[in-house]
Image (tube, rainbow, N blue to C red; front, side, top):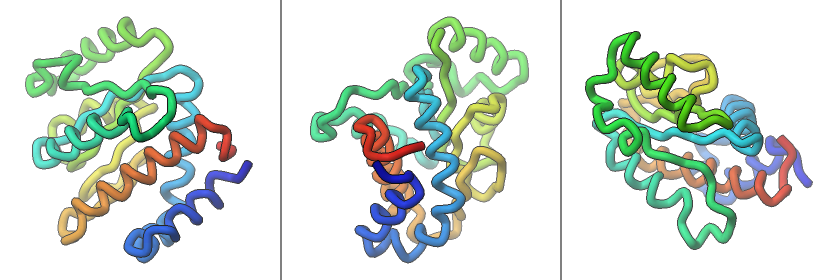
Length: 180
């Protein structure tokens, strides 16, 4: 069994494009992903959503996280839009509290928001309302967040690569290939 930090480095180096940018950022990546995957292994669910510009990525992630090709148990990964169809109207402190109350009832073993998008987007408030959130924030540095730059011409490619690294990390943790 390998340490997630060493395992991530090997995984990143397998993808030559990812190794050029992600190898330097693994110290930022590894503790975040380790804490969130550990939380999932303890019974919590991921509640996934993206800002409007990354709706394509939301669909991609939700279609691929439990793909048959993964050959692993299904992981608790849910769409916030499917759970809260009025998501665009959840933008006040009170409506976010009501959403959190509903999710606490629906997910008694716990949940964490997994948000990908601009830190300034109204939906980011939902993710920022919880200490347990996992965020890939664009143009904003924050705790529990992996920073991405909107001016990066390879941003979409990097999102897909990050998802694949996240997905591989989940599999490695489920099959006891890594220690968190």
